[in-house]
Structure formats: C-alpha cells, structure tokens
Amino acid sequence: MAHSSVRFTETRGVVAELIVDAPSGQVSLEGLCALLFALRVQVVRAAESHGAGRVVRRLAVCDFTGGPLRTRRRGEITEILASALASAGFEPVKPPVRAFPKDAFRGDEVAAPRPPAPPIATPPSRRAA
Image (cartoon, rainbow, N blue to C red; front, side):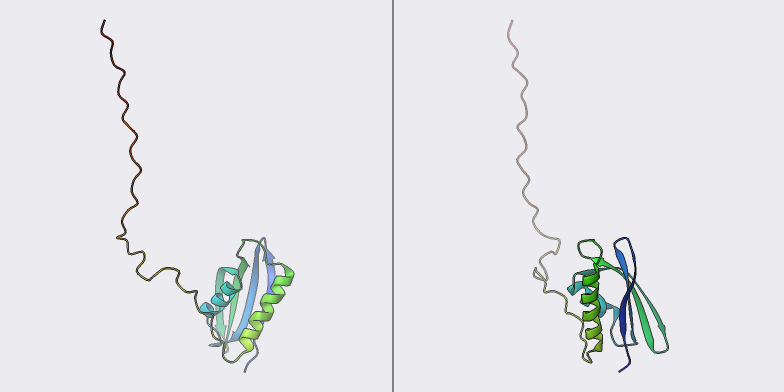
C-alpha cells in the first residue's frame, strides 16, 4: 500500500490547516470529515487536488468549541488519522442514530395553543351629574 501522510502546517487565529496526502480512492472527503466530526473537530473549509494517483486534501479545522486545536490535541488527531489511513479496511464513521423518528417533523404538527388574550379594559363608568 502506498504511503499516506497527515500533518498540520499553519494556524490563522483559531483555524489550523490540516493536510492529508493519500493515494486516490483510499478515503473519501466525506469519510475523513466524519472521522474528524467523531473526534470533535469542526471542518471550516476543504479543498482537494488530484494528481499522479494521489489526492491532497487541505482542511481548515478548529475545535467544536470554536477554539484553536492545541499542540497535544493536534498530535492525537494526527496519530488517529494516520492509523485510520494505514488500516486496510478503513471505514468512515457511521452518522449518529437519529434522535427522532423519520416522520417526526412532517410539517403538519398541531400548533401550540396560544396564551389567552388579556382582558379588554372597560372604560371607567361615567358619573351622573
């Protein structure tokens, strides 16, 4: 199997650039994003370039909290991605199970009852003179 590499290159504010260089067809962008999602990494932007049987993916990423990825966390992410790419049977992470039934939000739900209207103020009674 051809060699793959995963590395962080630069940081601008809270966004870091993650470069994944792998043989074409080894992993899809969707699979890579799903794995990053499972690692609680938010993909802000993604770009691909293809050539010579390889694909280079440049991903702008940050933590789910909106903060930067610290050095230790970057190391963990790099290690996990590299081992996932190295495994022959790489399978993207399955999406989470739906929290609601498939037809829970069809658009024909009954609207919530409105609160009662405030009472209409009656004018003060007029005195007879």
